[in-house]
Amino acid sequence: MSWLNYHHLRYFLAVAKEGGLRPAAEKLHVSPPSISAQLRELEEALGEKLFRRSGRTKVLTEAGQIALRHAEEIFSLGEELVSAVKQRPTARAVRLYVGIADSFPKLVTYEILKPVLREPEKAHVICREGKIEDLLAQLAAHRLDLVLADEPAPSTVKIRTFSHRLGESGVTFCATAGLASALRRGFPRSLHDAPALLPAENTALRRSLENWFRALQIRPRVVAEFEDAALMKVVAASGGGFAPIPTLVMDEAASRYDLRRIGATDRCRDAFYAITAERKITHPMVSLITENAQKLAGA
Image (cartoon, rainbow, N blue to C red; front, side, top):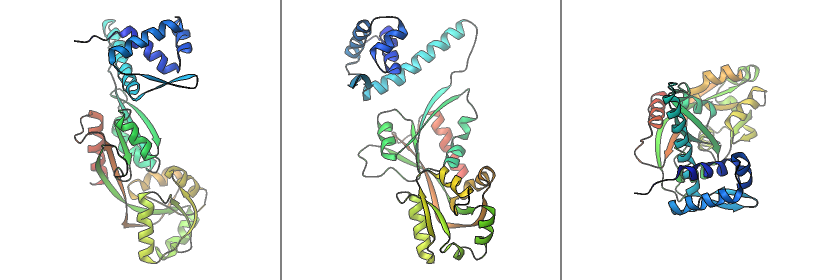
């Protein structure tokens, strides 16, 4: 049986956090050569390189990312042990790493994550936003537990993933009070040549909208396109045009951005997916999220 030297692991964690040997050495009050030797022994014990050099800094390898995550858990557990022995019991929160595709509606994200965000003593949530391809790469490297996206993982990405459908929502069109009042009459034909704020062309919702517009022979005047759904709502709130949002979160959007309803359709749908690296969801917080989301969105 191989034994892990936790002294080596402590040095590794310091280098990973500080970004190099020298700043880590200064923090730990030891010499850089001493840390270097400890890291070498840890890499030999694990049989993997944990860092690669990038300029003057050390960058974690894929194995290093995995080691960092476990090291954080190990030392968090150690702190809990000390607290317990000193009769200061603490509930250990489970870390949950969530990737959020930049096209995924932020209000929907909040509704999906709400069960775990409301119980900080049980879950410590770390959210990372980005392009779906980058997030899936992090998922494959075990740096994320799940990725929230508006469509399944693309087949062009050569990474083994599993897409779990959480549900879908119809679309409600909204705008500021004055514009909404004008466009409400004669909806949906009123959207023809009206100023529109739409999701970016590479998003699933935009494709669904385009199909719906085409079927009704409606051509809105596109003022701006957004990859960030939250920014789209901010611009809509300033009077820039009408915006489509999932009906599921219309009440929250109306309250937060002071937007008014123009009209809605169920023929245009916005879908929600949780993408994981495993077919069977075993992480307790991921299970809680998916079960709640499926009830929320009516999957």
